Image 1 (cartoon, one colour):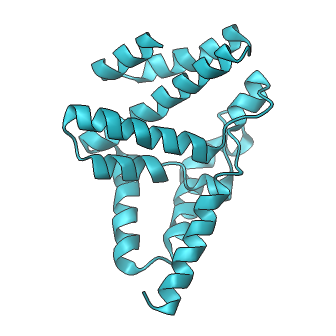
Image 2 (tube, rainbow, N blue to C red):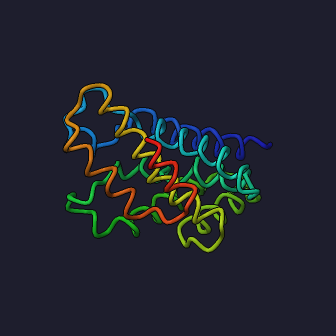
Image 3 (cartoon, rainbow, N blue to C red):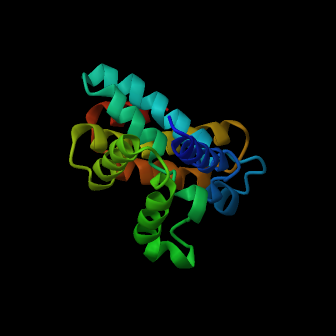
Length: 180
């Protein structure tokens, strides 16, 4: 890589690193979790789920994991917006602007590949994208179960699990949710 490309990669890494400090606000605001998971925590476990379930289903695991790793990357700039936030109605546009900025300094072939993954995830046009979109909800339900086990309010946490159950259609993932 040339010096300019190295600068772009290091800028990208700073954005990705910011997700380690960006806490998942729904857990804090609705449940009162004191040491809430970060967006990076959530993205990492979603990627692990993509590895497991994508392999089980014979899908393109590299693409699925890539989507899982970047699906919330825009939150390094816009924060973890909840449905109750005033900017929630603008979330899609805010995410798009943020991703363009985040990807802008990467080497062209990397920028193109990551931009394609981002668009594929957002549009849900492939089996891998549909899977990752549902795994995003499954991971949330897994986290809710962990918080319940830690002693947080089970009735409040059931809202998260019910939300996941309403959105997840894949039979294998429904079985996984039922196993929780």
